[in-house]
Image 1 (tube, helix red, strand yellow):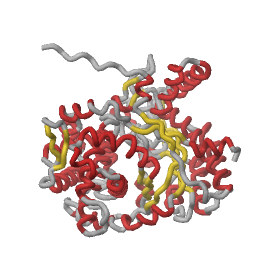
Image 2 (cartoon, rainbow, N blue to C red; image 1 turned 180 degrees about the vertical axis):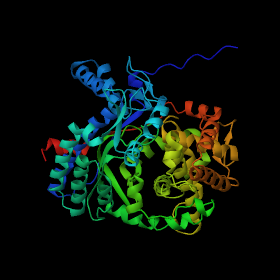
Image 3 (cartoon, rainbow, N blue to C red; image 1 turned 180 degrees about the horizontal axis):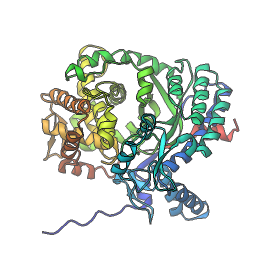
Image 4 (cartoon, helix red, strand yellow; image 1 turned 60 degrees about the horizontal axis):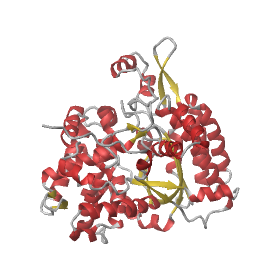
Length: 542
């Protein structure tokens, strides 16, 4: 028996070609001059948080980034491609190829990033935490402190405010300056509170301030340490990011009805009552267009988010759902439609719609609030129990619960302009979009688990003669309900052993899926943003 030849290693230019350059703009016509000046300052904050993120992601990232920039300045096209790809992936690893290094001499991506010592084991961490005070143990497991090794070789805590002072101090000043320029006082209050948090290392009050930004504010922004995906040891440490937005007022008003549906869906989840979220706070929903980003914002681009992630802030003030319309439109036209034409039968293509895609993403983000966030027996956070698997299971839960919710909302008439055929078929095509992000990425692994489960349950079917996938409408509703239940029970029980077994069984690329993915090689994996509005404002010296 002969083995198949190894896959060819793509060139830098081929990797770049998988991300379609896309101009992303917003309507700035209703902004004041002060708002426009503030946007430039917030873009400068984003650049500083970019630098802080590189300090967090790997001990060699900042040095390598400078070397690549120096070479690209007067170097070859290959040198320039190396830097472009490094900035696109936010590091030297190809996220769509299991974090394969694309820069010569770079090793494997460290699972502890640079927020723990690279030689630290989980056992050493656990033994050290057992010696700490209750407050320091909370910080060790928390979002906003790095764990470093002292000169004596012992582990110790360092506040983000101290570890990244070189970036956070000037970022704080810029936030205060931007606050003095913006028209809306509630947005100004958030900027001032977040600037203060960069110095104090206490973030909850500024998260509450962010949640209280008025629906009348023309500007929105997520600025700070948020997501924990890059902490592949414990999914605990938050990484700095910045996303700067201009609000779409009309689209935001249309979606207000979905926030009020949260409890309606929760009361009908296919799980025992103790697994339901008894502390639901309906999230405000805003629709925005993005104008800049920095930090933990590698491709694939974020299309929506439900923040904060800090459980203390959520319990105090709930969460907020932000839908990024111009990013979703770019993904739909450049990626999802071409995928659908390749993996679906021609009879299903008319049912792939932007409205179904946009609304499922919305319901996905709302669904992060559904189900258990703490274990039913001990009250520990699900994050602390599932550790490195938490992110993938949380993304899978939100995805599949969104489909379950769509059925409820269509049947009850809350959604009256999208059919379940459109929801299911659009979701099926989008599954292949997400899996292409790679199984080491939370959304990619979460989607693989869903797709394989639904294929096994008969909700989706593969036609080997046509090499296409389809929805079996006799089985899909029950399959979606069963998967929603199975994931929520694992989360609510905090059962990492079951989570590992589930991941090992379903978090794979089946042969039929692998064949389909091979056929998508000419389709972009995602879009690469061109921030034209900020470029224009900077050139105009606004």
